[in-house]
Amino acid sequence: MLAGKHAVFLGGDARQLEVIKSFIEAGAKVSLIGYDNLQSPFSGASQRDLSPKVLESADILVLPIVGTDDEGNVQSVFTSKQLTITEEHIAALPEKAVVFAGMARPYLRDLCGRHQVRLFELLERDDVAIYNSIPTTEGALMMAIQHTDFTIHGSVCLVLGLGRCGMSLARTLHAIGAKVRVGVRQSAHKARATEMGMEAFDLAELGEHMREADIVFNTVPALVLTAQVLSRARHDVVIIDLASKPGGVDYAFAEKRGIKAILAPSLPGIVAPKTAGRILARTIMELMEENSREEGLTP
Image (cartoon, rainbow, N blue to C red; front, top):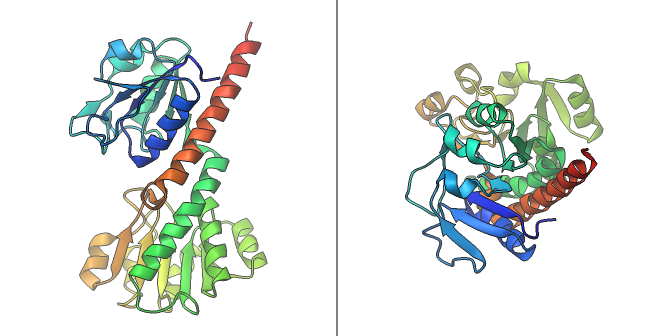
């Protein structure tokens, strides 16, 4: 499946190391861009500079979880060099090359679309999101314990959103004895929270519940904890914002009121990079296998 394939890893964090290891073990030819400060270089991988020439022979291009920013810049914790993907780089990829990223901004989507390069956004998949909800939940609990002086057991915890992450978090908090209230918009989510033995409320009523909240966990990728909502919260409430940047909290107002609000996206890569990396590696390999089958069916 990967034997003999040329995989280029461009940027990333500790999660990427597990994926690189899996690719090498599977017999892929691996090129690393943006890994020049790696303390323990991989045997079986070559360090390269970012250039169209390197990508001309790539079967697979693996980008970080956040893909690129709106200007094409790619983050890497293993280099101090500026890494920027341009149209020239994507145009250099072979016809059947595939690109993997956790998520893609319009910049990357547009580049791949214009050059008909297949792009996989891993975090859009239910299986990856559900697996990632495990280290996210553990990390959120760790942060809650670190930033409070009371037990989670018996505390009033608001979980905003009952998606894949919100559901795992609400279930875990409920299991350890927290008084969980789930803020949702969909009637189906309200029904699911009730079935799980938790109190459900409409997010439009969030301000009313903030008065009693000890800890608030937000998973909604939108501004839900507005100044108006925060004005009704206790000063000692702790807010842990798990939504992707810029989060769902009016941080300026929270600071003004002395409310502790912490933006904590990408927790899997922080608290359990090895586990998160294995999830990504397994998913990429499954997708490559599916891609190979589809190519075999193409006349």
